[in-house]
Length: 509
Image 1 (cartoon, helix red, strand yellow):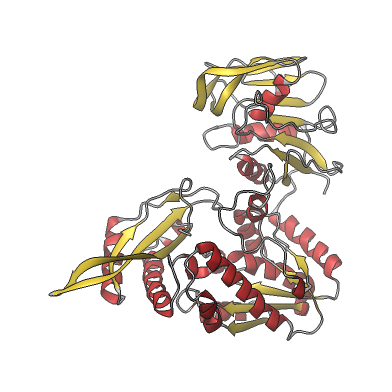
Image 2: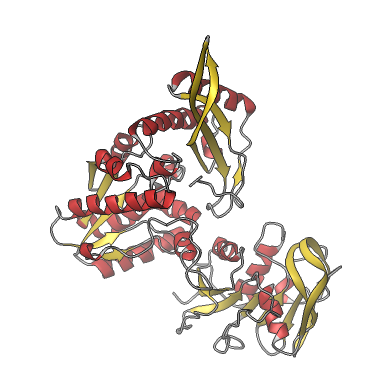
């Protein structure tokens, strides 16, 4: 692929959003840490420098090596990138008199500048910086200003280098997508050829070449990622794909049987393995969420390895790893701080001795769904809410018992089925119930109760990187609460989680 875009990450919270906006233009892009610029740049036609939480004036400011990029490839420097080019190339960056954060409007735009084609004065942009460019770098031409920011955008004469102090990737920059299109398509000449159909054709061809006649084993979860990965592999290698669906005892109510039934008509070679007791035994007495994740992961590997050994001469292990998993597992400053372990990212134990194939490794979640639609996967399956790899274990706060799993499965079933019945399911990105390690006093009939509390969680999002809680109708919440308390023995109180991500995560553990 010769029409790629390289995004150099300086640690901005918006870097993934830049990539998503570029992909929305049907242009393929990759994110790399600023200090790990690919040695071979022949496949890239343009480069974007991200923002950063750092100040260019700080001693520990990121210093990228742009010697193979600047003046050789079209480059767009965003926020920190714009300040970096100014500060170290003859300009001046100083602290802003007032912190420049939030909405602003372009009060002046230089005429006949291709970066601002079809963008009019007063266009709203989003600022997020505490430093500002007081003096432009050498050979720079000012392109735009706002009321408070004189040098909101500039270009370097004699090269296709552009810089902006605002963030075109965020929703609040109303013409941000247009600006990115102007730079990538009209200035850099990048082709808009990144489509689901093109991805399928390219990936299937690559899988055929890489795998040949070797056998591949894949652990299906019933979710979108593993299903789309399976169908891509099935299209490439057919009967040489062996799918294993493990019931860890922590799935939703009836999910093991329902998912196996869904796969029956898709042509996949799937074996269902019920190992519920084995997982519950491994989890006995564990309360720490990371220890629970590791116990589940280790047990899954043991079960999966046992089943994989039943298949002769397996060479590859396929995984449904997607791009956010990969990005979050790499930081511009070395290994990232662990928020939670990603069950798809990381090395396999030596005893498995299988090569790894990850056909979705460079896709965002919404892209995975579009590829799935291209492959003919049903809307019902593609529209399924994300479900965590460790299952209900991280929705049961504290230790895991069979009785707690039963309670949460019943609560979750009532909640999810209620969303479907009220035509709310497809308006929610992810929903689930959480069993809290709390008991509360209640009254049922003439008797006093001391039973469990459950929390309901429903969020709207695009890819899970950020999320807002969903304002579900009070009538729905009232009915759902009453149904749960009346039907699920052991629960006498229901609460609704109204936390957004950030600062909260979608899951509680």
